[in-house]
Length: 209
Image (tube, rainbow, N blue to C red; front, side, top):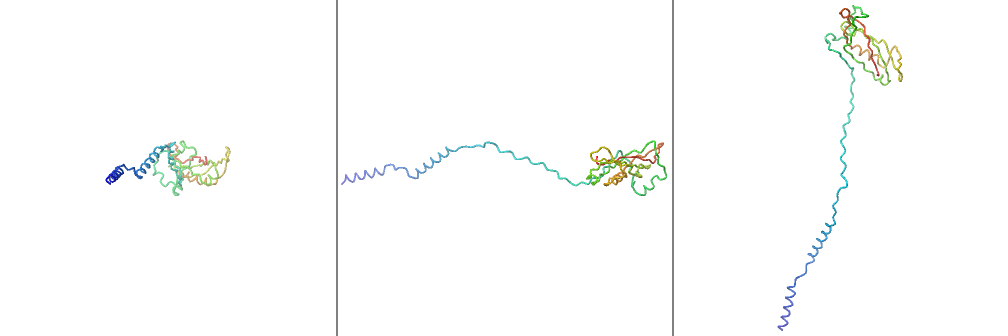
């Protein structure tokens, strides 16, 4: 009987002290770790084949046309005494300017322009493509003011021709624009023997050139 008990104790001790095999969870962890390792080994680092194009340059602002009022262009050759020409185009002064003096037909020193006002070409003349030269005859008083201005000659150049046509009058508002500008001119008066005299002067206004 004692021998049987001893044999059972030896068998119990054998099974108790024998090292236990790894658990399933530990094996699963090892397997998972091995799988991750394989995935990392197979990873491939990629790079861009070319750099992206640069962003487009900002466009320059486009100027927006604005409506502007075209005024008559004034050219002044030298300073003049403004008091001499104050309200020089008034009716009272034009009527009585130099009426008692005769006009010198050939003065020793003819009138000299010191202030020009260019005529503005009317829109109707622009649309019609008018090219014209208008000769104006000025009567300049002894203070250099325009006493009278009249159209003396009109030359019109037909389209595609260099030969002018002489006309007695012209439309499209050109005559009115010419005289309106001519009345604003200023002159250094003509002189005879050093004294100012009334005299004529001719000037040409051009349109469409």
